[in-house]
Length: 265
Length: 272
Image (tube, rainbow over all chains, first blue to last red; front, side, top):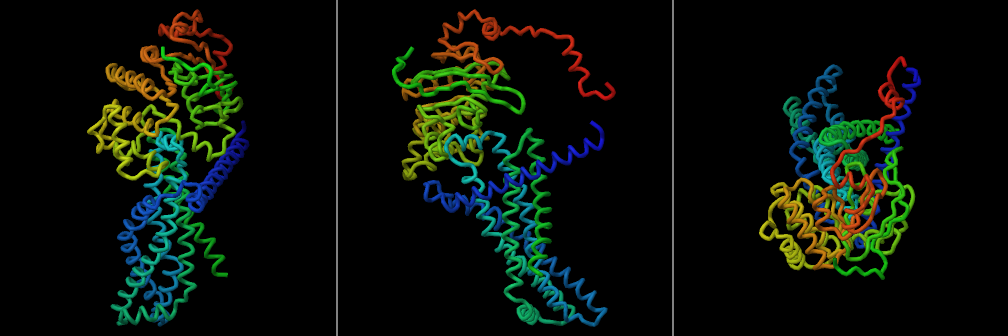
């Protein structure tokens, strides 16, 4: 084959594989929803203990990192905001600046990236090693649907914990920004918080929360699908884990852009 | 040889099974029936298609053509719910055990009961321990799979496979990776189980010794086709040279075609 033909063939193969993967992720999503809703009626319920376990691993254990990063991010935004606004003698406008960008963008983004890094890799590695040691086959031949047993609890836990982590991230960032602003502009924290609430509408918080649900779904599906499709031994497992984190973060940022565009028109 | 009920329907019936892996044909027109209560050993070298055959019997793969009937029902026509129910009557002991690494031995064995029954916790634990007694693993309930030896993993996997009292039991390479003594122990255990539970057993293996020790009938698979199905005696006395090669561990002479050989060497090379 000639070089251009090679290139076209390669592009075609890659695109097909990508579409196939998205289709697979969509079926994982549809099947998980099916088991979550219909499972109890066909006596194959999604175990609440499994959901609680995942909530712990995905959500609760991520709290320290999310809070630390969000707090630092809040301080950072206050520093940059005050420095930029000083040129226009408008330092006091730093409060709405921080309040908007944290609730609409950065809170949820930081929460999602931390979860993608922690749980995106952990989930892909766990499901991938189960695939390698035939544990997934074992589930199937026992008459236990792997999607119900493994994916549905992860998806539900993501949907429950991502908004919580986002709210935590929002608060930590606002407190961080508030403390720095308070020190530099002699504004008390309570005044800062009051002015935040004056600025913010429910809509701003909702923007972050809606996005957190979408990001949670993306992370769960990308991590699970990469885990299930592990082939080729421990090297394949490593590849799937890396791929899961990179793709999750890429999907989060791109989805964020698309959502922000439509939510702010 | 135990009494085999020839009148009743075979537990497993495979007709004209054909499967592909990509372009490559793996199984080519397999016909096989396994009667109730017998131990059928599917034997073959690596690449013979025996693992693929097992995956099809477990409905993990879908055939390209042909059909498989388990307990008289065509599996590819079953609804997913009916398939789930059928699977509760089937036990599988995987080659590497496939124990759940996050659960200890007792939890592994109890797992199918917890998922499929509404028994209370104590009953489930007692039943799990009874099965662990059967496979001589009493006292190891609290160990994690990573703490077990190869033979113990196989026995724990066997306990999990029989915990729902299946009517049909599959073994994938039961003696792979085990020393001869442990392997012989496991063979004894398989024979005992059949006698105690009246379960139909299919064993996929390449181990000749173990195969002849436990089998009622043997099926020899080679390059995706069945060479012979018969009692151990019939297989031993078969005059098929390929069967004899396999039994006597002789290597096979592969005829060399000069043109194809050149073609293989130069295939895909630039400038040719």
